[in-house]
Length: 321
Length: 234
Image 1 (cartoon, rainbow over the protein chains, first blue to last red):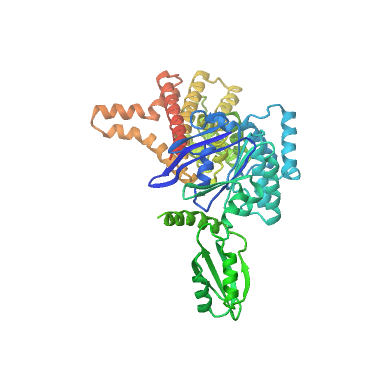
Image 2 (tube, rainbow over the protein chains, first blue to last red):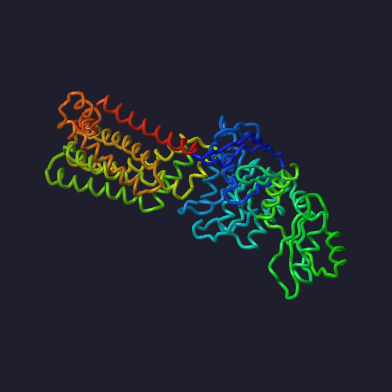
């Protein structure tokens, strides 16, 4: 459905995208994950034809976005990161305008039915007579989502659709995206890992204009949550514990963390890539009569993912030497 | 194009802007009608149309200032530029909506001529020639100001630039008088909107002048399309 090949985008000296390639099959819900300025929005803007790439190609439903932009745009529903609306328009007027723009459906009765269906799906049926400027942020986002659904697009491109929403609104929008995935191919960008996990069947991680990972979110997390890195809390003197842990052959580094409990010390113990250090750490501490009180990892943050993905490449290069 | 035309037209009349522009045009038209026609006891509308030339120069920048700049500032252009609509259709839709409002605004002159015709004989060829002249002048000015609106995010800057260009088009006559070179005199006289407008005030449908105004309009519409397209590649 979507084929992106070697996409490069330069803004003057700055290279925002450095040769991104990926393809998306029909019915997939793909998440673009990345920190701010990673290149997510630039990628989406190119996919929607809002801006052009410096080089590379984008094909949507068999049409090239540069050669045949109108045909591409006909199959795309796009919700930009900042949903901008005309302040003088009511919800129904705005959605009718979007219908006019997309030329769908021209028949008034069919159009009404179509729009009623969309409004009902996104939960704005009671808001159609209201001015958009008077709606809350959550409802505005829904209107933005509704306009993307006009014309039953084959491809839905949603740029950070839950930004600025409260938790209950986030859950609702996520459900809407999941439901939309049943009839459309969806690309959704976010910088929240848990969001991508909750919505997407596949995640593409972008960092500094490059794809650094591409796969199922669970697989990605599994890869990251390796057993070669442990955060532990041990009862005893810092130097003694450090000495015991540093002597383990599989351990690469031992880093003391801020003390959280009196008489104990927290450490981040890192083993060699691919090694499982859990048992070794346990037995070594037990042998030295240093009680292991606690091991913890906690939720992985996006920063952890990036540190892992970028750090691992660095480590892999070092170990290869 | 039709969707954008409808939206823009609606925007003019869902805000005070459209009404203010029409009210100002009607006020000045009727002021000059009273001063020159009723008070002067004449059915010659040439003076009225000549005065409207100056009014139009100030009305058009206000009419067009928000058309492109506001979309850019508010980022509502994202919807238009990602919709299956060409850049040309976007520009033409906006242009046509401004032309319709402009037509309504200058229609006051025709209305006054119709009212006069009930009590006196009106020189209709002269009135229609004048009306055509002011309409063609508007076509060109709207296109120029639309282009100016497309190169900035600020409505105020778009309007100020529009006023400046309008004034320049008036002053260009004066420049042609002060330059000594025959070539530049001809050049400035050729570009002068005032000179181009004059034949119409005499009731003459001057084809070269009509082509000039239409060509200027087409050129600046094309410039606006290119500006919009350029943003895609920047």
